[in-house]
Image (tube, rainbow, N blue to C red; front, top):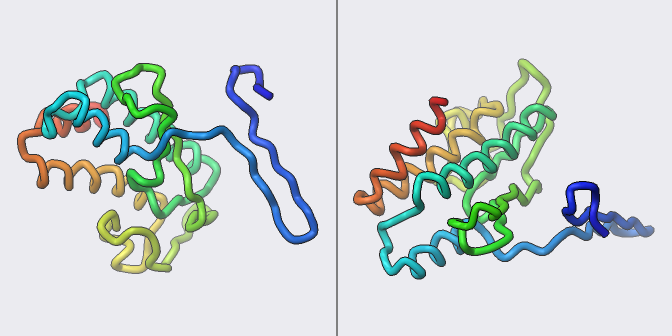
Length: 168
């Protein structure tokens, strides 16, 4: 069953012991899609064109902004928690959604969290200091891109595009 936008609705069922959530099926996660595009193009360092990268980043930022507007910190933003509806990230219809809310927590304005959770290689400095807020989710996006630059230094163009995107 679809809603007014044509996208499938999520359904929930609760019994005496469990809560079940039924939602649309996704093709995989962002890392799988990035590997697929690299294999398709035959160039491991080519990366995505400006439009495709902008499309992915815009959807990720939109998801994080929505959570933060609702007063929620995800705390584990990473490629494996970004689901894609198709492997071809170059397709303008490709949808990216944030998943795995097991570590997400509500955070009142002016308050901080202190538990050191999430994937360590994406931690913001505030997580090490055990006094953090919503900014850790935004840091995780930049940490991912920085790691890509260290691993694939010839992919500078994606980094420049990401910087331009954030400055808009």
